[in-house]
Image (cartoon, rainbow, N blue to C red; front, side):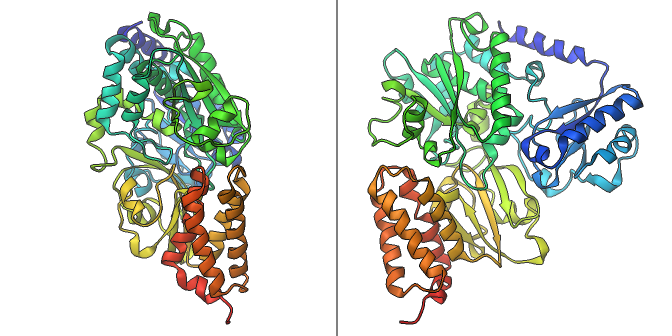
Length: 537
């Protein structure tokens, strides 16, 4: 198979729906399903049949982004970009008849949401370019928008070294939180001796308030599989695993379906695209342990062992799964590979900042009007994200802080809202970008309670293998609890700070090493709230 062949396959799909010029797209991601999308889809389907099919069809799609406004429905010309959709929010089955009747005429004003709002216009969609547009369970639907074309291009027109070079030129850094240069990681494994190698997609997204990877897998699973296949070709691997937490049943179903259909079409398995390249993918379900997001714990879990980290070196690139070189990237990292191969590394490197290239997907949650997923270029400021894209704080309350990086990150106060969002800038404030969770807090938030909540999370999720994390998080939580109840002293506060330094410096893995971050950042910016709770000595 070559580029012409896959273009022909894409054209067959378009020909199948040649008489359709309008689509009624119903979001069937978890967020909209939980707010009632299935009966809306059923009602729209029935109303469409009653109205007469004409040149319109009803279609299930993935996440449209504005999760707080679900169920969401869009009416659009088949090839129209999202900006030209007629978008509806909080749709109910009772709206179905009016919505179907409005196609080609005046929109239903009472449920319409403007697509010229900053939430949509300020985004730059690369990873999410097809989410909310394609049917995530349709293989040919993915091919019709250019899917698997980059893989065919890589296999038939590029050497493995050329693929690695393109990814290196792009400046893409790992989107799982560490920010390690992707091209450098790939080239390290590619240089390892020929033999068994593995590709692992880390989909064990466990940060409170984070749902980026879940939405990508639910909305565009083939894109992640394509990225994994290109990576496998580049490094010389023939086996891949998607490590996906079982708490994401819809993502599990859609990735399972995507693997089955890709195999059936010859895009996974042996002699892919009639070449000598073989690559097979399996799903491994995680039980929801946060520590399994750490690479070595993840690999232990895949191997059937208890999910606990081990010391490094050796790093996974040298000795990973079953002692073999292993590439581990997260969902969003793999989802960036297809456009990089399609458009070129220089194109991608032209987006973002000098040291943080491309775009980043964030999950906005907490005290903010527009809760949902956004994709923005690196270097955008927190103020732009929260006040413009996020729509500000609800109920007229004032912004107080935003937590980035989940339990591994820190809280950023209002005076630093103009900081650029990139890997390096956030570190200067004692926090990290992490995988992309952003929890916004208003003036009513108690920052000692916030620190206590995240410490309780880390304490509960600690695997217990190393003493600093196992005992240190418990002691820090006990001190935070004492202070929050107004029973702590200045001596307790000093001990808390000392414990933060010890746990940070001596823990085995990233969970313990970063567990003190929420405490340290709230102490740095909201120390007065701690001191106000201390009892007189």
